[in-house]
Image (cartoon, rainbow, N blue to C red; front, top):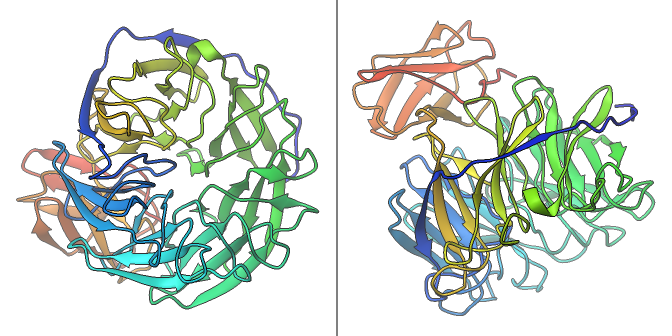
Length: 447
């Protein structure tokens, strides 16, 4: 991608007086504390899964699951020897297990990759050792071919971080070592785009010294696509999202006209800065964006708003920013993780501090969006079995992949297993239920 002239687009800010906001969990140390960059994920059982960077039995962090009504179960408390202080999100692999990273601890003290089942059976499958990377802050991604891909912010050949791939059994292969000459210190996760490449960001490095956007192919060919220059954003802490229009969207934690962070999009033509945050409408978006079923983007800012404790916002592709919620410490402060839109249409997120014990919260925000379905994984070959997640799938009578009828089995009210049919092409998955037709939030990709 060639770097193009960046256009700063004006954005209208609209503050809504009220949304349906509910605090579901108050962390108190015993059940976890301080969830950081993690965004919740929805499992095939319909429950929400996540990590906390502190708390639990030893104070080194936890893995938890919870119902959407707020009943939390601690699945694992870290003990330093098996990892400590997990900061990134989990991913549910095609084998049904969840995989994640702990930023520190393990045999070498440099962090770990772990596997945990929905029932809580835990195993450390890799210990980082500086040579292959150290201190992974982000979660993992599993593209269609089955490997897990991730980043470390330190370690590697030049000590500036790595990109790696790993089998679900823990066999690790280095793909790229960052160096001070180009990009370094990736803290956000990777995404697989429609072109089959993996995209991510670094918080430092590049020609401007304040971070980059990069791409890497599954075979390891690496490209720096854009170097931030502070004016158009700086220090992206989070990963990217590919929107319905094919463009990649993201945030920078700092920089922009006010120095409080930006929202941007990038295509093959270059990067466009869409919004510069200011304290009144939110500041320091540490998390990335999620494109919801209404086509708009949703996210959080770590600070700003009327209380300076952070906000939840909506941003339209046309540049309109709407503040949906301002935190006031009783319901949490300083959200650093991203949002999840669950298949009930509502948004779920966390705050690092605040709440009744000042150790963070889990919240739900309803913006009136309808239920939908999502696939696990989001891409696959004809003949592969794909999970379809929803909230009330009992009695489903039809499943189609971009119009092609598929054979399927209703496993539970929250899960359908379907076979990608012959003749299927990339596009939306639809499920017909007694309550109506549910469409997938993103198109399913046939490689």
